[in-house]
Length: 161
Image 1: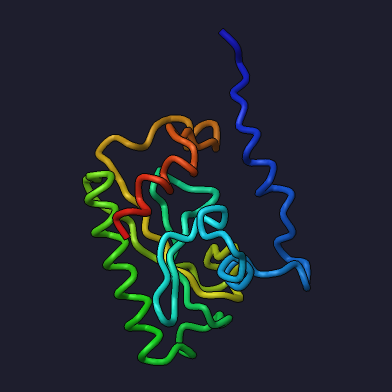
Image 2 (image 1 turned 30 degrees about the horizontal axis):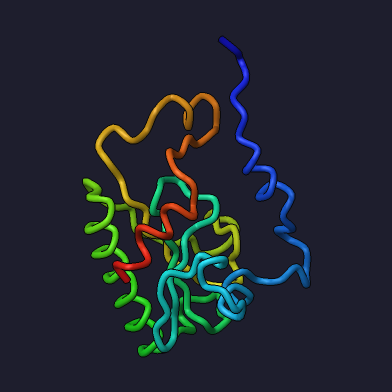
């Protein structure tokens, strides 16, 4: 038995520019890509979209974001709020159908101090949860163990949107 657990996919996130100006915004850039599957975009509506989190807490962890680049929740108009909330609801239904989770965490982090990785562009997290889905790895090893690849999660969820 070895004392090392490898999670090489984390290096992509670690090496990403997080605070560098001009580093781009995934919530602005991803929707302009020509390939929704490659961008992990599951659904689009008039004012917002759903995409898989590339660094998920659990399989099926999605994010809902307005297309407009805005970081202050109070700046969203009523139409944008309603549109995003409809996609949140649609995401929960799709995840219930595809994954049968026992519950969900739903939320957003407003500002870097509150834990937002990309505070300049609002986004909601929908994380499916199962009884007993936490384990010692997250607590002791600060590592997540995910049982499937993002592409497999995408392929299972996409038809449900």
